[in-house]
Length: 196
Image 1 (cartoon, one colour):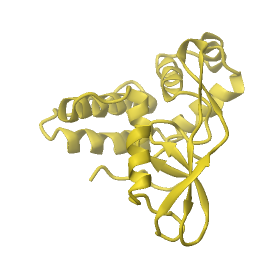
Image 2 (spheres, one colour):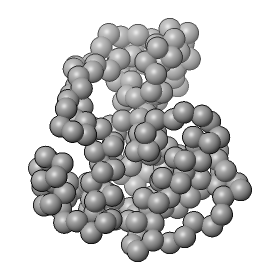
Image 3 (cartoon, helix red, strand yellow):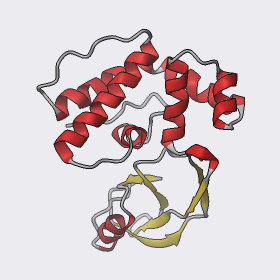
Image 4 (cartoon, rainbow, N blue to C red):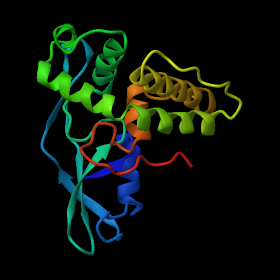
């Protein structure tokens, strides 16, 4: 899987122009059909169907799915659904209540929230760096009532700084997915990519 930009037209242009590199060997990727159809569960319970592009390395012949950076890899939920669950948890709601409100399985919500809780300090630090990189004039970020609250505040402040500096941006949690290189909920200790 290769994390790419969110605009499929730009990704296709870069692929045709030979500007996407194979993560395995560094050679040029070329078009190689499409991956299977995916369903993305959005807020409000609706599903969006989409089909990611596949690419094949011209040298080592490995194939890769080109995954939009604003989505969380290997997750079938819009990042905004994950963000809504995290905000409800930071406000004091229980896993079961959040799952009911969002119409999701309790185990799914518990998994997200446990992982976000374990990574709260890492997320806070990462998005604080993003916020100050995007807007060096920011005031100090005041602590919230919990580590998860601190992390969520940093995500929102960084997303606001991105909008001010770069213009219209994806929604807050789509920005969070992109700014972590898709690793926000990943089962890995790989570092999030730095903003610079």
